[in-house]
Image (spheres, rainbow, N blue to C red):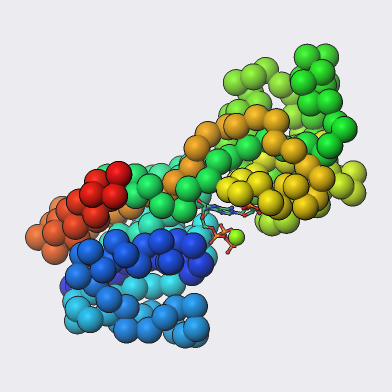
Length: 216
Ligand code: PRT
Ligand code: MG
């Protein structure tokens, strides 16, 4: 396609990206939250949005099916970032990657004693690197969601998950014991498109950039 395709996921990424799109003069013609369409036009005939699963965004941009995308740092670290240029931390969809345990589980002494921990998470790469750097031996258990359940039913000792308000942990009698890293969403750009469509992409990237820095 000769215009610009932007990959976004529904929910918090779309909600928090809408003001940035507006700053770039881009207005979606339909609301992806209510529309069933996966390709959504905008007020600009040369700009369209595609609606993808959050964890698929880097893949669409890597292969050039989208020129731009917006994805959480968590998603980018798990994907690996091949073929992607990551020019801007958009400072949206912020949260923290945390280690959490059930109330009553003594994480600090388990770590001190060199116990082998069973870790349930969707974020295998991030968890593997975190515990390897601490020298903690872990058995990683891959889940696709609702990690909070795993320690409550004996599937794991600890979880690695995103936390924003902490309400989900509290509601399930879990507590955060370690912050792995702060997370926010990044603009990602297909590296080939950045060269071939520079004149088209550069103004959009700059509009995002100035919208973010005027917010800081
Ligand atoms: O939901 P789906 O399986 O489709 O994919 P997803 O969960 O990857 O997508 P989505 O849209 O839920 O999240 C998109 C991005 O938002 C993530 O990749 C993060 O970078 C970012 N983000 C910011 C969050 C949160 N905050 C967040 N709180 N992603 C998920 N959560 C979840 C968290 O996993 C936990 O279950 O919210 C729950 C905790 O929230 P609190 O407020 O109770 O602490
Ligand atoms: Mg989700």
